[in-house]
Length: 169
Image (cartoon, rainbow, N blue to C red):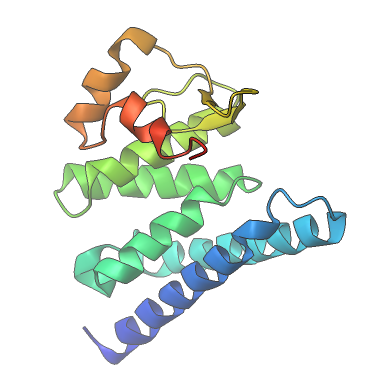
């Protein structure tokens, strides 16, 4: 990688670390804490948009595996910047079609974008809420009877195994 790409990779990784640290505030009771989360994700979404202007989708071959995953995380959490999320989705779709990115990450971003558009998801990756017994409830899926088949095609575990991770112990 060039020195510029090394710096870009380090920046993306820092953004993901900041995102991870602030995630606890996303659903906080305190509105100031929720606002902190929104500001971080908005700032990161803006910066990802600039990065996409510069290099397109930041693939692993450009910025390394960790930074590419960080870019995906930033796109996932750009929920209030649907234009950025849609653009990231288009660029990631092209990268997957060219064999330069993974279908699993694409599936998660596709579902996230669809849900943010008020549409049904495909892979059942987005959780709408939690039942009283603690079991997760997915956002509606376009083809619920095919979810596990579609998930398997992109390397995502079956839905029941996925949601079991969210269940209280």
